[in-house]
Length: 476
Image (cartoon, rainbow, N blue to C red; front, side, top):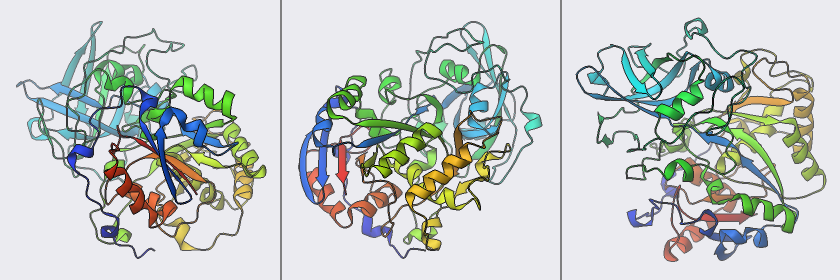
């Protein structure tokens, strides 16, 4: 365990420093560069000029789903359901590819006005979305519900992955995706239409069903849902947020918050990085949960519980990482979610007693968790290269029906804090983070006490903070 006071990772953040809107163009945001203690600044479109030669950039290609569903009950009260994570089917790919019915773990805004009746929402083309409380009382993370209650889920012919807006599904028609976005659901805040929203204790199970089996749940969300901006962006979401609160490389549905370090990249910049600067790109998927905004409310971080997040990585990405390690090329993750996923691979390899133990040989694939304190519980002697080679062997035995061939699925609640030893990351591209947050602890683990110098520089030099703010490149 770590004896660290979160008060040592606080700093003054005036409201006017928090970016409420993105830069006019993605790659025109400012870029602060910290290179082994030396600070400089440029604009993000010049990233190729400051990245180390032959870098492997690792991106999180998760896609933010329109997680806010606003219903009206029989008395006219607005009830908001804020999707947190799949409950049934539990596996993310099957969940978003499900047809007719799913069960979600969620927050409920204005819950006192929902008297356990069925809520309905009328969508285009005579589609009706219905919501029924499956769990009438607050639930804990350990509560379970039998999959038998989930209704029809995806079949073998359904798409194995759930793709981005308006792509063609093999069994479904292409659907419209332009929805009006309104105020973001936020813990304890007032929604103009919903009344008092749910607090952290108001977690429920809700079954959602629809009368058009041709549509997947992913497509239903595109029609019915609203984009979930972070609570510190204190404004109504607008139509532009559906595009700008999404990376250009977002591919797989599952997040309720964007991996915001990737918001600065454009397709043109990605191509330029590869063609002009020899930068290699790789992708993994970690679905960002609402817990990313969970503040540390205890003085000692040992008393803070990290939320678990599901991730997957392909054999081809593992091969890219292996080759970069072998060739001694720097690996720079884009965003804290990519860092935590990469670093979790080192400890995940330790979870298996042999190089051929399949982690995905049954449906309980997310039992392969990297726990919060694993790095600090004992000494690990295997090298990063040995870890990747072991995982590559494991991926070769993957027989899970919910996974594509050559994929590794797991979950992580890894906390990276000062004293952590990085195994893969030689730096990071990231945004500025909230005071007293686990994300700031990760930055302090990289920069040491220099994080204060960096943040003071940014505050004095008109950098914009948090999700829609400016970017940083840290090179260790």
